[in-house]
Length: 156
Image (cartoon, rainbow, N blue to C red; front, side):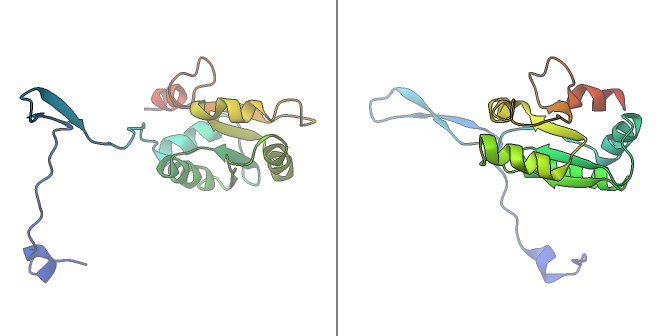
């Protein structure tokens, strides 16, 4: 879209300040820290690795996987990897609590659900509200078992 001789190529790009903390001297001479809000760094999910993992887990075309993931970038990478196998992907709304989330999960007929570890308390509200539960995999740091991060690291 933009070539070497494009007018957009001549637009100066401001340099990024990579220093996340600056120390400045205040009026009293004491140094204080100015902290900028940086986006949360999350592990990058490769769609190809995710599709190989899902195939190894026995997921096949036509089955449904539910995602309860906050990071939209990770959710999109998961969706791309799972749809590559012909799986249906349902993104659950984490704002819907207890019964609403349980109803959405039951209506999706998911065979597997991927939940962020930060949303463990939200998923705990579903407990006791379903007849049968899909297989559960945790996404993110802090998972003791069924960690998607560790499973995808083994695919490398």
